[in-house]
Structure formats: C-alpha cells, structure tokens
Length: 393
Length: 96
Image (cartoon, rainbow over all chains, first blue to last red; front, top):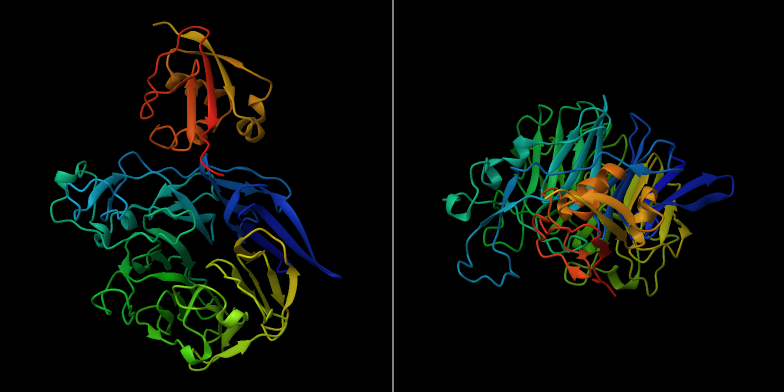
C-alpha cells in the first residue's frame, strides 16, 4: 500500500496514487476544511482525517473505502469533569492575579494527530493535551486518565473546581502559540506506538516533553533525560521541552528520534536517555518533522529550517538531511529540490518514509517524493493548499 | 410552558454537512433554544456538536438569532421560544 499518499491540507484531504506514469493526485474530501492529519489504520484499513472547522469545531472523519467517501466518526469529547491547569495567559486582561495558574474546563480545541495499534486500538492526540483511546477500531473513544491526571500537570483535578482549590498544584505543560490555529494550550502531536510491543507507547507534547507508558497507557513517566533547551533558565530541566515530533524505528524500536525546537535528539535506549545530534554546520538543527527508517534505527531524515525566528528554508534553498550513523554525520540531499527563492516550511507531520520512498509537503503547497531514500526528489505537485500532513497508506 | 413549534433556519454551510437539514425552515417543538438544538440533533445526529461544544455552550464563532435578536445565554442556551419564533443559526463573521 505504499503506492498511496494521504495528504492533509488547509483546504481538504488529498490522495496521491502512484501509477505507471507517476503520481495521480486528487481532492478526496473535506473541501475547504482544514485537515490537520490524515492516515490509514494498517490494522483495519480505515482512513482517518482530523478536521478543524473554523466555526464548527474539531471533528473526526473516517473513510471505510480508502478515501472515496467520508463520514463523521465517533467524536472526541472531553468528559464533564475533565479540567486542566492553564499557565498565566499572556493575552489575559484579568490582571487581578496575573501570575497564577487557573483551572479550566476542558473542551476540544484541536485534533492534532492519530496513532494506531493492533486489535482496533486508535489513539488521538489533542489540544488541550488529551490522549483519547479507542479499543474498538474507533467506534468510541475515552480520555486516557492516567496521562490527563499526570503529576507533571498537577495530578487529579476532579475536585479542583475553582482557582481557590488549586493550592500549590502546578502544571509543567505549556501551550505554544505556534500550533496552527493559535490555540494557546498544551497539545499532543506525537503518538509513537512501539511496533514490537504495542503496550509500549510514547507521546510528545508542545510544550512539556516526552512521556512513555510500558503498560498500554495505565502509567506514564517522563522521558526527557539528556534533553536540553535554550529558552528556560535551567537548560536541563525535566519538563518544558518543545518536542516538535518523535518517532521510533519500527524494526528497531529502541532507536527513537526527536526533532525539537532546540535541535535534533537521538536515543538508542528507547528514550531512556537522549543525545543531541544537531549539526549546525550542516544546517541540521531547527525544523519540525523527523522520519526514521523502517528497519535501521540509526537512519533518519529531517527537513531543516532557519532556527528559529525565521522558520524558512535555509538560504532560499530547500534540502532534506539524512543520517545513517545515529546522527554522527549528516548528508544534505538537494537533487530535485528548488535551490533558488524557496521558502518552503515543512510541518511536523508532513514528512514520511516507507521503504526507499521519502515524501514531504510544504506550507507553500509543494509535494516532493523520492524513490531512492532521498538521493533525488521529484515534485508531484506545486499548487496544493498549505500541507499539514503526509503519510503513506 | 408547553413547547411551541419554532421555525429554524440555517446558514448554508450546515445543510451542506447535514443533508437532513436541507429545504428551508424546519418546524421543531421546543420551548428554549437548548431544546431546539436537542431536537435538531435528533433530526440530524451529530449536528449539536457542530453548534455547541461538549459542555453545551454555543461555539465562539457561531451565532444564534431568535426572532432577529442575538441569543443572550451562550452558556446554557436558555433563551425562551414562543410559538412560531424564527431561529437562525449562523456562522459568525470572523474571517476575511
């Protein structure tokens, strides 16, 4: 099925099918609607789309026929007693207690990513910071409470109904205004299901860091050892890291990669510890997406941008960087990519690797595919809407 | 108060997403706007979550007009409806 690419864009879901004459591209649904993420569940064959209507809220859409027709799926809704601590809002006009956390009732702001496990498990990551899980192929979803109530975000807030009840609780989960749509609350954008042990999964949060469960989501622990940042007073703090995307190697799940706001990080021990493997002299430092080889955990791809105030292709030339030695060295791959006046930005879900194929899409509507692990690229489309996600079928 | 029959109309976008709602004003029994949205959801399952969030609050970028006046209670939609009240659900103009 890796002849099919599912593409989420600001104006709908597109599908690109590889045929004898290259890729055929079509608008497959959700015309005019923001589609944050589209992916096919390899276990059920259903295709899922995470929609963001400007007026009508975030909605899950599902296709049971490969993207030919779509219908609203069971919707993600926060339970009535789901509350979260919000850090002081920089935009608040209430200056009575400007430095205090506030407790807020959770309502769905954004569907950001989906993940899939065997046995009909479907995971959905949201803003504000919810992991929703289905055990029945997506017929119904429940908020994962152990993560929602994690100590890193103030623990169980069931009885914290008013700000006066907060006491000394605090959250280490912060929002990032860079999230598309500008929802200023923490969000789960990475759901990494271990390909060999489906009870082992990781989530990454902007902005908090990485958490891992080894028991199918019953308990969670932070996995930020070795992470560093350059925007907090303590660069080695346990929490507050701005992971942009996290993925493990399907064939060697102990190898985990993270493109972070503050560089590229690599773990060879299942995210127990991270090592910064940025190579600024090669332009490898800032970016949003990262993709790992199917089999070789030491091989990964990134699409760097200028860090971090500008967020553009470096020097007006677009390149993909690949490492095959766990980040000790990086190779810039430019063949087939524009090298003059290119200002493409590649979002966190818009780079994918399957076998020898590499595909990515940009905010300027360009879609590129490589058949040789990135050594050379061909442009499949130039005029798509801004691209949010690219995934192989 | 016994529920009267209100007439409900929509911005064009909603019937596009919910074909059940096509074809002009719909008569629905309801004595408050909240009841009206609930009745609407029975007619077109799922539509209430487009109009309101999971706590029953009107979405920020949605407006409801009751006989031409903007809804007062966006939290609970408790605004009363008289028989033959005309209710209009619209996208707020919050874009270019």
